Length: 202
Image 1 (cartoon, rainbow, N blue to C red):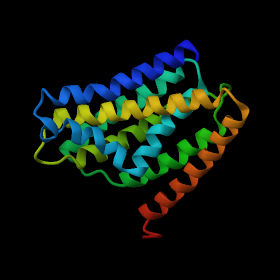
Image 2 (image 1 turned 135 degrees about the vertical axis):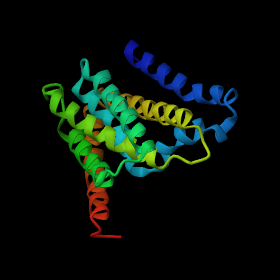
Image 3 (image 1 turned 90 degrees about the vertical axis):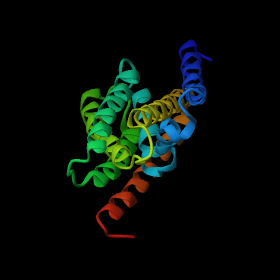
C-alpha cells in the first residue's frame, strides 16, 4: 500500500476515534458533539455529497486532494454559523440536492486534466448550503460550538473516506470503471432529491 494512502487511513482512524475520547470530557451526547458528529451520517443527501467531495478531490489529484475538502469544510462552518443565527435563506435544500447531482457528475467526469477551480467554487457554495442546514437543525438543548465541531469532524471523516475510495479505485481499471458507474448512481439519486425539493415528487 502506498505510503500516502497509509497516512490517509491512519488520519481517518484518528478522526473517527477522537470524538469518542472527547465525549468523555464534554458531558456526552447531551453537550452536542455527538449530535453534530452523527448529523451528516444520517442524511443520505449529506452523506453522498460529503463522500463525493473526497472522491472528486482524489480524481483531481495534486493539491486538490486536500484543497477541495478544506474548501467544503470552511464554507460549511460559515454556513453552519449562519444557520444557527437563522437568517431567512431560501432554496437551501435545492442547493443541497443540486450538490449531489453536480458532485456525482464530477465523479463520472473528473480526472487529473480537469481544472480544479470551477469544482472548488461549486464546493464552496455547496458547503455553505450543507452547513446552513446543519445549523438550522441544531437541537436547542445542545452547545452550538460543540455541535458545530461535531459536524465538522464528521464531515472531515467522510471526506477522507471518499479520498480513500477514489485512491483505491484508481489502482485498477475495473475499480475505476465501477467508481464512474457509482457516480452515475449518485447523479440519479441527486435528481430524485432535486425533484423532491421542487415538490414534483413526494
